[in-house]
Length: 446
Image 1 (cartoon, rainbow, N blue to C red):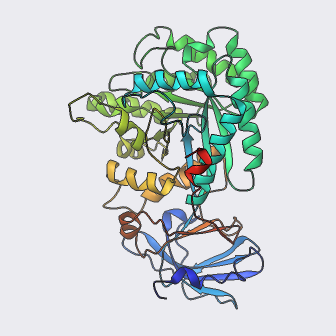
Image 2 (image 1 turned 30 degrees about the horizontal axis):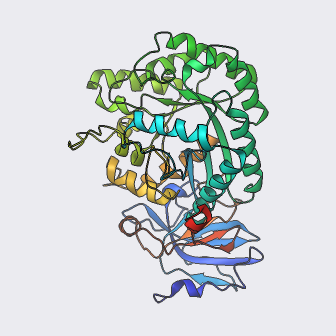
Image 3 (image 1 turned 90 degrees about the vertical axis):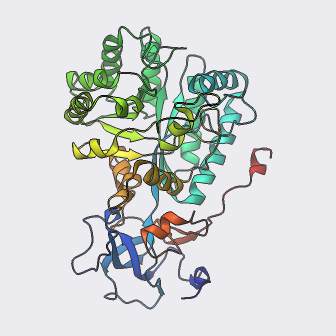
């Protein structure tokens, strides 16, 4: 196949109907349910040489390369094929406010204040829908199958944001699976607003969440009653059978994570809690880190690291080069049996000035930042099956019976996937050739 390989995709074959064979594909074994099929050749980078049979928009069979045949076939010649990826920590309500919101200075307190000002001034139902739709159009063009967004749910804002999200979720249901989490400072649960918010979240099928700091405060300060507040949150969640997803310790020095883990154990919430950020964990003395990680493992907490945003925000001081990376100790967590995912977080807003809702780009950044390579074979799982399992979704894996939601790359190995942005990727949704062009910024007014 020559350099114009994408032209070889016969439009009449990739309609989502009938049988179509993708022969001689190279798929990371970490993205194949059950790993590489018996008899398939596996490269040193962990990619398996396979044939993929598509039928009526689903994957009908996965077999060693060269063993399947069909009248309609595309010989990929060893090119990489991935499932669409999963972004389990985003902020669709904040996104694409850069230039409109006050300048944040690139710091966490500055971003918090700038976002609050923008929220008070602009976050109407129409504004939220417009920006969420743009974000999802971007994600869809990059091959994202599912997203979990945190929604600022302050009193006076929550009803508007959740209603806009509900409409957006329905509008995008056939392209991207969406979940939402309530995001408020933890002390917001002290009064009766906690009950009202939990009811709202339950009505929308969401998750209960928050950030382990006080309103207007910083991580590590101002929550002397953190255990009482966590108990209050878990009681509200259990009464409504809601899972919990928290922003935790997004600072160099903060110690909420052990409190969250103990609360999960107290309330029988093992396996039903997600914690994002946890930046300070990487800076603990080794013995204390190991003790905290063991507690996290016991509580069955899913951890989400957000390298692009935390490298942008953490340890930023004028005229000084940052001294640390702002990410959690992924290798140590995985070694303890903790489920860890990577995610995109903020996009073109005061918390992160850049991004395009591209989980492949997020994954590539994470591999470099966290040294998930050498070997790289297991790394793709952190953006596919791991977050999908945490979200309870059939996504992020290639397997018979699953939708033929695929990304085809002009790359033969994982190092080649890493080396280029793969802006020419070809998407198949339900076996149908899909548009991979991101929306024009003109949709946001330029």
